[in-house]
Length: 449
Image (cartoon, rainbow, N blue to C red; front, top):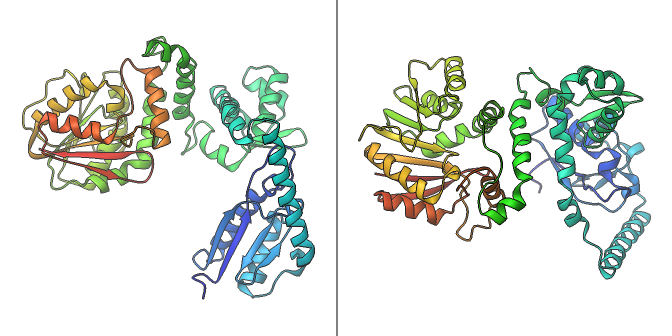
């Protein structure tokens, strides 16, 4: 018995440059077409689709295997997908023109491929060659920098409905020669498409990287471009033990708040569900940024009133988001530094610190927790949403790397572990503490007064 009518495997493994593989042959496009066609035919819940590693007949890619019969389809294109869905999945008839069933020859080909691959790895290891995955890890900045430069130059907006390198270069006031190099690199990264000499956006880049589109993330990603500059000082920061990057706004605020809003909108519902409102009437959102979390909590609890505290230069952005959400009557804002702004004793039922604690030193966080404890009403709760590390501080990987981001960007910030948060909370007077894991890199630490 099978839990699904069919189970489909599509190879999407990427291999070293110049090595034949299904991904280079276009298996990603085949996979996307398959998902789209199954959705259009109402079959998404009846057929399980899985991407997989190498199937061994790389010169015949893209390869798809359909179980339970174990039908091998090879050299597929997106145009073949509707026929497979209609004939095989709906009518129960294999598509013979696409099927490969010379099983003895296939087995020999697969075993030959495996043996050659293992021999290559053995030879490289014997020669002392750096493994491919480690080499890729070291050079990973190249692709990142190409995308960030494209975003800084607003290349995807300039591409628009399409254009040659010369036309796009003119739109961004850049060298035609250099622009062509950048555009070709973006095609290799599957963020642009190229037909003859004309470049066009992919559906993904058109949706997320073109300025002014409903889901544009360009401004938010410019924050990463700003972070890049600080990361270039990492070696000196490690020597010094603190940030050595130049201070000052330098256009930092708008991209930073856009990035925080972009992240928060993706996590807010999960945070609200995990933390719960629990009948809270008054909430304080310290360093609330765009107000995304405050808006989510207010929408979840019509009786909840929220106050957002942030710096004066941030609050105009916050207020605009609140206004657009139609919650100006229930969410107020106050300008100030959360470490020094007066907080009324026993006023709040819920205090949120989202993506805040990693900016501060242990001493500053302990000071902040004491202030929060005083501001909470009896049974009030502090909710910390942050990159919570395990006790040895080496996992999750995102949090361990983010600690370096705080090293290059702050005087004393870092990623902190669950035991550290628990210690600080109890030292502030909280009796009950717990960690709540939610999908993604952010976890919650919750303490009750």
